Length: 155
Image (tube, rainbow, N blue to C red; front, side, top):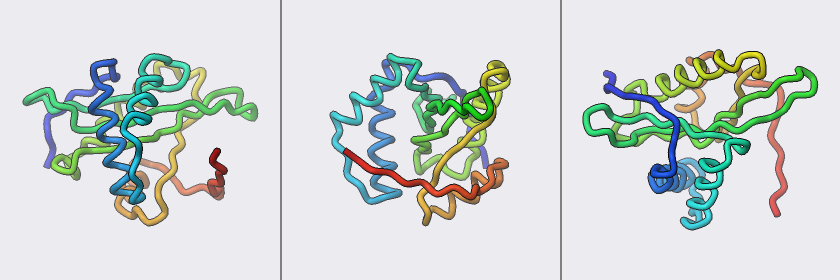
């Protein structure tokens, strides 16, 4: 089953909804409780500084409510002399999951990449190791597991 959606880039009026989705995602996928104001400020910085990235939103065409999102950030590849677009903060409202919302977001993203193709060499994303549903979704969209593992240190 699908839902009628429209896809658009996020605007300042979307900060609260995106922040809410980010907080829900962290809790659902990693059991983390995020600071609301920190998340709100982080979302605002992305929306107001395109050098940091951009959000794409899915809206229910029936009532124009935001039902899904993804964030794109950039990684310069000196090996390729182009950018990878990292897909992050993917979230679809639970009522709309399994209704092809992510596939519509991803299709829109691919169209944007084609318009900017000379500067983009591919998409990357990371997924929580136990999130089998997300893994299957990404694999169905053509993503393949790499040999890289992610390491981090936080300050």
